[in-house]
Image (tube, rainbow, N blue to C red; front, side):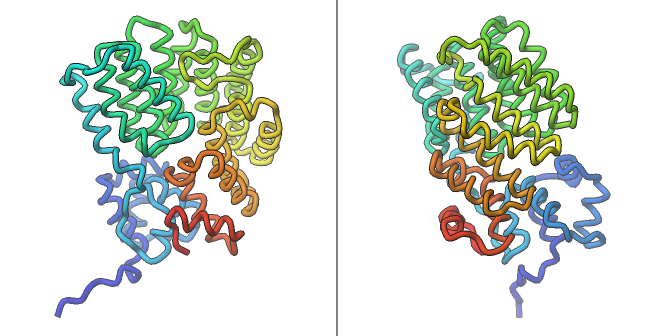
Length: 379
């Protein structure tokens, strides 16, 4: 008689090994993303070392793009979030960069499509964007400025959905396409730095952002690059550099005379303030991060941020609240993010992970529990 294996009886280390293999990651690649040694990973997977700290389990789940409950609760086969259904089509579109069909729309029509796609991004409509990005890359082929913008947009969406490797490819294509135009190259480098930070390559991200900042003649682009550089510095613990770079960004924001944003950077005073909060958290100053968060959401500039940016910041704030053991405020931050831009919470793996941790931390408020159920979490 063949007995079906009870997955709940499978040791946690072996479950990690199986899920790692399912993602196509070697032990070394997995260890690098966790910031651990290959020996540490091997011991965990063989059961020699126990996984008894939730923070470590959470980090493993983030690398594997899973909810922690899939490691800790009844095991189910990993299923992609709804927003990831179009990832393969985007990957294929990036792969055919040298063999695209001739555009079937005029440059003016393609420009309208790019502007509409950026508007959709600013409202966090990620599932819809995944459906149109392949055609958008084809439509803008042959019009350099529009193609750079389409590659940048693709990179930003992919970072949101935790496909940083693919995002880096799209961002690199944007830089290559923009060669010879310093401002377009600089705007493309915003996406490069963001993807590198998502991959954990903070020092490289800082170097890339600073190299592109000075040649740019647009303050919104330069300011955005200083923001990326400051966050990169915070990512590897360089407190002084992080503060100095964000001060440079703040100075550029202070001299803005209009709200025009031709390069879709979202740069401004509120963007710098949210970056200061995130940098403080990255540097281990959780209390300062929360204070800065409370300040920015009460500022006049807060409402001028795109819905995507506001919701993303609220997710970052939820992480800070959790690290300060403020589960209730973390839940309220996620609820606020869901009201502003639902896809930020319902389609981003990082938000699902935070929700899972809130639920596991004890009895959750009814509205938080309803949100967890809405995104498919069981508890």
